[in-house]
Amino acid sequence: MKRLSVLGSTGSIGTSTLSVVESFPDRYRVEALAAGVNLEVLRPQITTHRPSVVAVRHQEDAATLAGEFPGTRFSWGPEGLEEVACAEAAHTVVAALVGSVGLAPTLAAIRAGKNVALANKETLVVAGDVVMAAAADAGVDILPVDSEHNAIHQALRVGPTDRVKRLILTASGGPFRTWSAEKIGRATLEETLNHPTWKMGPKITVDSATMMNKGLEIIEAHHLFGMPSEAIDVLVHPQSLVHSLVEYVDGTLMAQLSVNDMRFPIMYALAWPDRLPSPLPALDLAQVAQLTFEAPDPIRFPALRLARQALEAGGEMPAVMNAANEVVVAAFLEGACGFSDITSTVEGVMDRWAPRNRPLTDLEQALAADDEARHLAREHLR
Image (cartoon, rainbow, N blue to C red; front, side, top):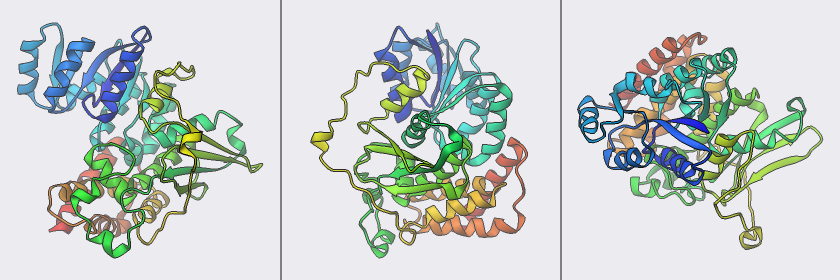
């Protein structure tokens, strides 16, 4: 029986994880849950899984839930996240919090000797060198849950890693794949959130529309698989069925395909190195009939260029880029800026940071850069 802690249980990855757990009750038990403020979703999760520890954002919510579920310990705030991440009985932590808030508890889980099923891009974008060094020191595994990195993890099992030529991350292209640059610049919030293939939270859906999510994934792939920027490519694949590819030095391409359901990569990450019989429908290639691919347009989607610049600059710059993006995406979701302001703000903050960028040595430095970059982004928006 593998015992799990789930950070971000009420989000899309968290709910999908608990769905997988419910499909394999003899394999998994939920030891601890961490959520934010969505108590309507959290309450039935507690009822079903009876975790020992639950963390929420606010102290008053923790007090309310403690009165409803006397057999469970409740905590709150950053300390609560860390308590869930380090729950003694848990073997694996599913890190599914959105944004840089997931960094500290994920690092705490690693240092506590937990394997991590990682669905939080920002953990490796903000402090990848620190996190991977901590994982190596602790002797724990980081299993990617993002469908693209999960696909690469699977394809890398085919041959020796020193015979890999390049990694190819696939991208749906988002809702604006065929739009002109001028039309993209005028995109509304409703149009931006209308993703053609995936049902995701609002922040990651906006990142998909700008293709910043793919930029973040380039940085994440660099840290997960030790590949330089020039050996990580992006290919637009509108059907979202080929989740990524690995090219070996002999020219062989290994691709991972499945129905676009996040429960597939979650099952793989939780069961690794085993594989479990899937309760989900298999991919019917005859019904699909056609798979298409195209190169991404760096002019219409400048976020890809910004992410590569951040990776190549190294140090604090990826954290700065990510923080600026989080601020401006939140502003866009609140109607406080336009779609075109997202990448222009990120670029403006990166330009201001470039002369002072320093090598990254620890978590505190990454979080300080994150905090200051948020201030610069808000200033830029004003």
